Structures are given as structure tokens and as C-alpha cells.
Amino acid sequence: MAPSLPALLCLGTLPKPSLQALPSSLAPLKTQVTIRCQGPPDVDLYRLEKLRSRKYQDRPVLFIKTMEESFAGCYRCSYQNGTLWSPPSNQLELVATGVYAKPSLSAQPSLAVSQGGDVTLRCQSKYSFDQFALYKEGDTEPHKQSAEQYWANFPITAVTVAHSGIYRCYSFSSKFPYLWSAPSDPLELVVTGEGDAVQAFLLQLLHTLVEVPGEGPTGVKGVGGEEKPEALEGVFIIS
Image (tube, rainbow, N blue to C red):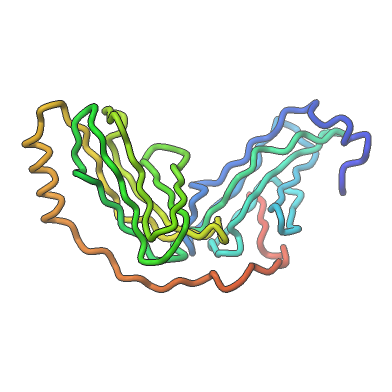
């Protein structure tokens, strides 16, 4: 049931709920993911909706047993107490990964860099995608980059110890922003103290010797047309 006009006039008097995807908003195909809306205790009614799809449910939890491309998209939720409706939660972008073959990730001039130096991480695909995303393990938000080529550069200047860590990248099309490639193989960026040139050289040499070529492309799929609305039955489950 849609909020009444008096309820709409009272929007904002309740705290907005939170919305999260577990274990992550980056969901590999064929894996399980749970979308959970959380408000204060004793909520009368929840409304969880997928934007631009005309799909919604009046329950706080969406359990996706097997991630598919059709579940990818933008979600938000709100709740009702009495006649009052809360403001909507922040939007949650649920991304399906593994739709396309993984890109490669490299560091130039080296994956070991001295503090204060510069390094560029390049994400490269065999397909002409115009969007790339770089994730550092432990961070919650990616760095996104548009590109007209088959690759995107992510420059890091004045490197500090905080930049060291494991990086992965993804490629995708702006026409289908929630359908991403599989992640690249992990790349470990090591920040060394100034003057550790020998250590940096040996680390780069070791990486070159043990690097295993990535898998060949599996072909682009899922870009032939827009998804069609699906029935809700059998999809939404309360935990």
C-alpha cells in the first residue's frame, strides 16, 4: 500500500534505514547474496524495492540463492511506523561479477615503489569496454575510470605506506553498469623505504618469474538486450 498524503507530508521525521548486501555488493554469478534493510526496533512495515524495475516487497530481507544478471541493479528501502514513512535508505548498487572474462592488472614502472614515488596501475581488457574499476583490498569503494581504449590507467602519485596492499580491477560497459567482468588476478603493491632499489628490483623479478598467464576470453555475453521484468514469486525470502 502506497503512503497516504499525510504520511508523505511527514517524511523525514523518522531516521532513514540502512541497506547492505552480504557478504558483498559485488556478487559473483551463481553465488548467494543477501540484501538486508535495517531500521529501528518495532518497525510496522518494510518496503524494499529494486529501482527502475517495478519490483518491490514488503519485507526487510531479500535472499538471492543463486546470483543472476537479472538481480543486478540499484536497490533502496524504507519503513513505516504507524502512518509515518521514513526517508529512503541510501541506494545500494548490487553488481553481478563474472559476466565477462577477467582483465589484466599491471604496475608501471614496477609493483614495488619507494615512498614518495609514483606508480601507475593499468587495467586492460581484450574487449572494448569503456569503464574500469579498481579495488584495493580492505576498501569499500572502488576507483572508477572511463576509457576509450581497451585499458584504463590509475595513477598513484606521492606514494605512501597506506597505498601498499592487494589490488584487483574489473571492466564493464556504461550501457550495462551493473554487469562486470570477473576480477583480475590480484596484484600486490609494495611500498619500500627510500633507497631500497635492490629489494624493489628483486621483488619485480620474482613476480615476473612466477606470473601465470591469465585465462583466455570466454566471450562477451549479456549485452544483447535489456533485462525483462520477472515475477517476484519464489525470489523473496525472509530470513
